Structure formats: structure tokens, C-alpha cells
Image (cartoon, rainbow, N blue to C red; front, top):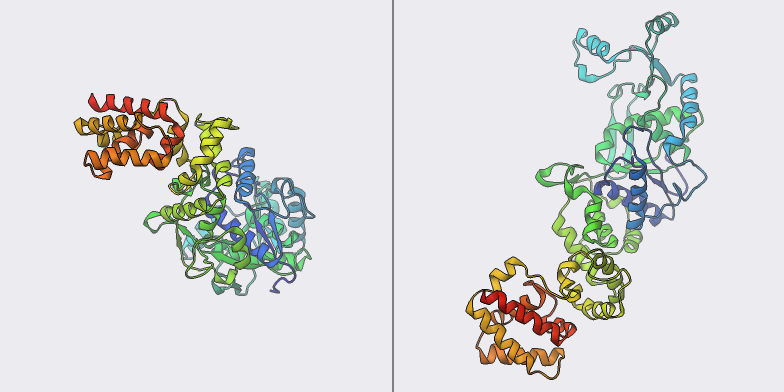
Length: 495
């Protein structure tokens, strides 16, 4: 069939049925990047013909997820465009008209056979029932049709598959061919006329002028059906050839199995709630089948668009590696301008009740001061709650593991007493003065190694064994709060 010409038009057409899968969003990302790279259009539409499974909440969630990732669409819901409506549930009249044209031209026909009858015919012919429908209804006579209707049967509509091989040059996998007869005539509409996905998806692509379809490898086996339908649609004047297809590698989870919706790591919300940056997650999703260069893993969405070449997408399965995703995100997080980091981390602290939604001047002062130091120690934004929470509460809560490690026995009491004495006598409450006083008292005078010396003090001040730099934290907390926390920690250590 003739390949499309003109500007590239890609599409993303998910079903609003629950959580948003990271593999699905990877497909959206590649279609978006391909369209943007070529100066084309990215079309977003909703496949919601299955009313029993689709929800308005899931629909809204899809829109919000795309916007959070920065995948803006040129046509689609809430944006509009010349080919709307962009929800299949609102396009019933379009599909009925298409079906009528296909039946009239002889490309689609009524099929009265039940699944049991198809199996029985296959068995009687010594064939494997798994071969599916056998084409028996292709030449139903008027008398047979009348008899079926008299029995109360309602026919489905099937596409008459062509009797030639179906081939295409896959953008990712190269030449692919399905032999004639390998794919049986398939159902376009249920009994009663309800159109099915194998019809509505290619019809929408045709009527919306989609030129390129990037989708998962698991859908490759259905491509011959789409090509056959495109031939029929072209014959009745509703299409002008099939789009180019590219089948993206599967996203695998643990055990070399496809990452399923039941796997928690497949849920996009997990990453958003943990505080992944959208640009960090986009960067990692891009690596699931594509690379900007052999020696480079970190890049911005804009750099991806600039460099994206669909011919460089790998056909090999891509394994979802959470540790690598976190490492990529940490790199993006540390590269943020400090003011941007503060803006992004504030909602997480506010949700935990540590700061106001609009921080007070004092909270803002502390946030601005600690941000450059906190960025270097964080992987995701939600870690700020545990890492920085001690700076915004009156009394610190000691982590049990930290107490067991650092606040037990006479050694801890000795360190805390020495630290308290040194800090009580300190006139200059600044980071350099705090560092000098504690090193003098704990390392030089007590003879403790730095880890033994400062571990109990860090837990006393922050409640944890890991915190932002100790001396800067103590300066921000102030003399009274710091000394009060040392005293509270001593009570725990002496108990």
C-alpha cells in the first residue's frame, strides 16, 4: 500500500481504565517526541467504547498524567482540532456510517456462526480449533440468512480478509510479512452493531490523517488486520493508504516477564507521589528502547526531541530498572536551580504538615538556606520530609534504629555532655565556630574518631543517622533548640 506523505501525524489513544502504566506512557512519549522532532502533530484521543470498564475519573487522570510529564498534544480533548470528537464514545455515528459503506462494498459481511459451531467445523475437518473462524459465512444465501433470523440469531460483522500476503516495513523491526490466510476474517462489530477496537482504531487513524503509529510489540500480530482494513477503507474512499507502523520493544519487569499492571512499579502515580521530577521520569522512559548516544544517559525532554530518530529505537526488550530510574532522577534533581528545587519540594513538606502551603518568612529562610545542601543528598522530592523535617518541628522524634546505633550507653552520654559544654560556652553561633568547637571538644579532647564523635550529636539534632550537614543544621536551628535537643538525647542515652 502507498505510504503516507506530508507532515508526520502521530497519535496516543489509551483506554481510561484505572491506573496509568509506565509502558503506556513510554509509547506516548515516543509518539510525542517523533512528532515534535519532525515538526508534525501529536494527536491524543480516548478509546472509551467499553463503557463497562471506562470511568470519567480515569479519563481525567490520563489527561493530568500527560500534562504532568509535559507531553502536550496538538489535537484532542480540551484542545480541539479539525477531526473531533476525540473520544470514541462520541463517534458512534461515524462508525455506523463506515460499517454501512464496508458492507455495501462487500468488504464486510454478516456472520451468524456461533463459536461452538466454528469449533465443531474445525474438528470435523481435522483442523486445530485454535485456527479460529473459518470463513463459513462469507457466502450466506438470503434463505440461510432468513432462517438464522427466524431462529433469533443476530449476526456480527466481519471483515473479508484479502487473499494475498500482508507486508509492511516496520520502523523498528524492518520487513514483516504475514502469509495469506494466516489471519482469519475478524469481527468489526458485535451483534447489535456495537463497533469493536479492531474497527474503530484504524478508522479513527484514517479519518484523522495519522501517518505514523508507534505502539507496543504485543500489538504486532494485529497489524495485518489493520492493513486489511486500510485496504478496504481506501477502496471506499475513507483512507489513502496505511500509516507507517513501528512496534516498540516490550517493557519487562522482574523475571524477564512483561511488566504487568499488577506490578506496583508499573504505576505512574508511584513515581509522581514519591517525588520524581517529570523531566527525570521522561528521561528514564526514553531509555526504555532508545538512547541519545552510546555514552550518555542524562538529557532533557527538549534534547530528546532534538535528537529523536525512530530508526534508532531498539527492537530488543527493555527491562524496567527502578534503581537506574532513581539515579537518573537524582541527577536531574541535583541540577535544579535552588529556587526551583525549593518550589518543587515545598508541597511535600506542606502535605506532611511541616511548613505552610505558602511558607512563613522563617520557614522560607530555613528552606532557602538548607536547599543547596539537601539537594545533594536526595533522590526524590518526598525524601525531604524525613531529611528536613527536624528543621521545622519543636521537638525531634528519634528514629529507633538511630537510637540503637548512636544513643546507647555511657560513651554516648559522654559525647553529648562534652558537646553540650562546648556549645554552651560558644559565643559565635555560626557554622565555622560550631565545627571548630565540636571538633576540639570531641575529637581532640575526648580522643574520639569523627564517626564516634559526631554520630550521637547528629541523632540528637535530627533524630536520624542521615541528615543535611550537621553544623549548618545547628546554625539554622539556633542555640536554644540545639541545646534542648542535646539534653533530650542525653536522657534517652542515659536511660
